Length: 230
Figure 1 (cartoon, helix red, strand yellow):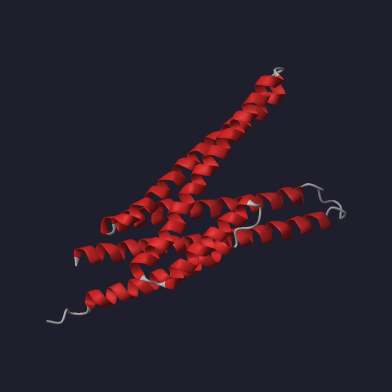
Figure 2 (tube, rainbow, N blue to C red; figure 1 turned 45 degrees about the vertical axis):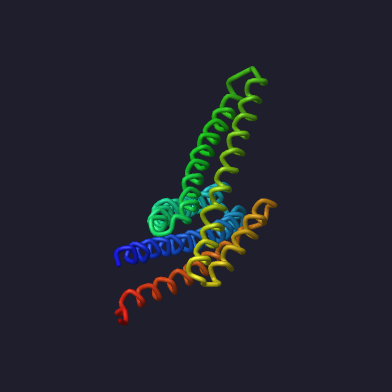
C-alpha cells in the first residue's frame, strides 16, 4: 500500500508539471500576440504627434519580454519543481524511470552551460567596443558559440530522456496509448525544432500526458480503495 501511495503521489506531481507546461505555452502564445499587437499599434501611432516614434515600440518589446520571462519561469518550475521530483519518486517504484530523472539532470546541466555561454557571448560583444585585438574578440565569440552549442546538445538529450523516453516508459507500465502518442509527438516536435519550425506539437503532447496521467491516477486510486477479494 505504501508503494502504491508513493506511485500515485509521483504521478500527481508529474501531472502538475505538465499542467504548468500547458500554462507556460499559453503565456508564450499570449506574449507573441500581445507583442505583435502592441508593435502594430506602436507603428501606427508613429505618424500621430506628439507621440514619440520609439516609445510605443519600447513598450511593445517590454510587454513581450515580461510575458516571455514569466513563461520561462513557469517552464523552469514545471520541469525542475514538478517533473524532476515526480520522476525521482517514480523511480523509487520502478527503477526504469531513473533514466528520465537523469534526463532532467542533463537538462539542468545544459541550461547552466548555456547561461555560461550567454555570459561569455555578452562579454565578447562588450569587448568589441574596448579591445583593439579583434582576434581575441573573435576567439571569445567562437568560444561562446561553442559553449552554447554544447549546452544545447546536452539539454536536448535531457529533453529526449525526460519526455520521450519518459512517455514510452509510462506507456510500458500503464498501457495507456495516449502516452505513446505523446512520445511520438515529442519526437516529431524535437525534429521540427531542429530544422527551425515551431514546437507546437509539444502542446498537444502535454495535453495528452495530462489526460493520460489523470486516467492512470484514477485507476490506481480506485484499485487502492477496492478491498482485495479473499
